[in-house]
Image (cartoon, rainbow, N blue to C red; front, side, top):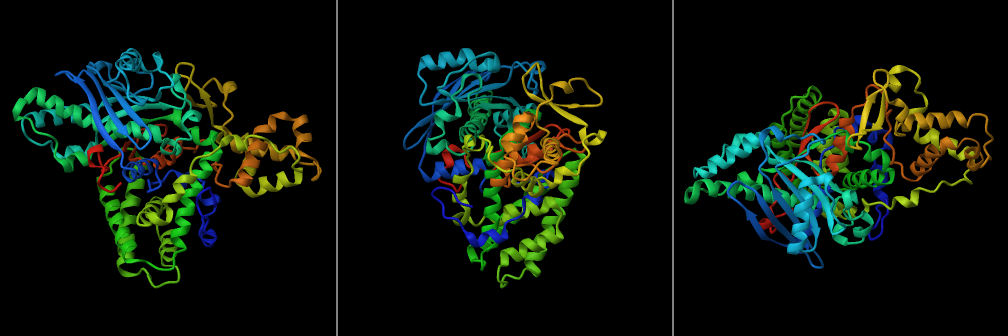
Length: 557
């Protein structure tokens, strides 16, 4: 791997996992957050660059209604989260994307908003999709209270007591976002307008900043309501309980196609993580600091697994695998790990591949990366992508070369009979109501004629058939002149030849495909924890749990 500003490590290449293993949904659906996750990258930058934070506006009344502004002040620029708190009747509260009212709404403003800006935002942000924001805004979001826990925390703090720690651990957040929009949606700034700013050049950094500041707002809001109710008797939330709170999120099918539609970005995310693992495996010794860091990360992972719950059968089975697997890792490290091996971290990894279920393997990966920041953190600079560079099709490529690419990178797709009901059971489409991607059952529901072209395996197989009988030296352009419907498949094949982690190597319209596997992979790169699927199509997670708050940025990120 090479990327501007970073030195490649050729010795690590031999330790890199194959895309045929990594890019299967069985692995992607067991992803865990790592120190390369986007929220960790954000916090490290804020800490390293000495960003300052304040709250210049707090106009929230005793009912918890009003406006607040949180500023992040950096070396070159300032960003402000503008938060609007609402008095939402219980019957109006919904996490569904079709909701029209929320407990709180937010916009991340580029700079410090003036009173006129706040008036404009107050007229639009609470409306979300029904309003319009401007290029001065970098994201638009909304959140609902986790009502039982939120009310419990307010009640206890108002009485001068701390909330029940078990309740806080069980839920893990006071509010959960139901959408965080950016990249030009509803008038917000286009990604191109901010991508060259160092602090926002990485993926989803503006969105992560918005959610992190939202977390501070949720705690400030419960403490404010407690003071309004309890007066001088009220107390603030204890620091250890406060640290354990994140921001919840409900994520559904609308986000699943992102990784399919952005193959270059997916490649760079996965390649950075795989390069990081390979670099660790290539090390020839275990330093005292690295060992201590790994053991601490392993213990943290075991504690998190014990607290992590889910009612979904698939996730419950994964959690059983995770708890058992992490216990086996701890026992192996204590008793049998050969730390004097030629490549001790590789020795540990190979044992894990042979002995652990996939869920625990991916947790082991995260723990192995944790103490090696000096070795791998720079790879975060490689996780963005200029997707325009992969769009053009090389029409001069000989058919023989294209055929070899398909054989090498799409062998998983070429042997599938896509006319069999189970192999073409689903179709992706766009909801007319919310213009969001959805998944239909082809043999049970109407609408397949409006199918989105996300059937990458079927397209590759159709291209393979179209190449039959064509001479090896025929330029691809000649084929596409006669059969232009194969242009998307040719483009993806040429991208994957140069970027081997660009393609999910599974049938995305098959009956056994689980969208939550795609969602979990993406959310793990965000830094999400406590994945809790509510069906095979949407999941609840938590962001920034156990992370520092703005007033704690002297702590390690």
